[in-house]
Length: 52
Image (cartoon, rainbow, N blue to C red; front, side, top):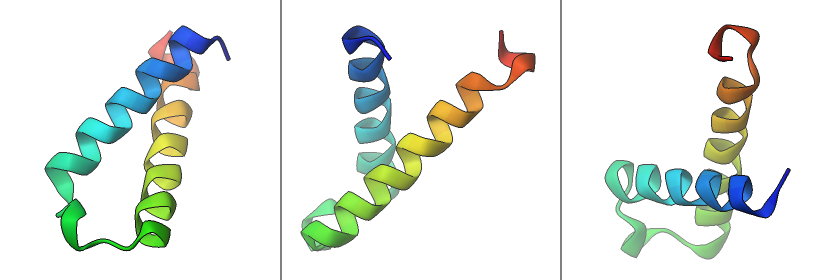
């Protein structure tokens, strides 16, 4: 993945997490787990053939 693409994925992930969760009450572990899960779902959605 290019740096620009990864940065966009990171920004989308952060935007989603900020809207979906109260980040102020999450532990670092919870945040990192949620970030990773959301990021993987975004990449998977963008990688499916019907989205190209």
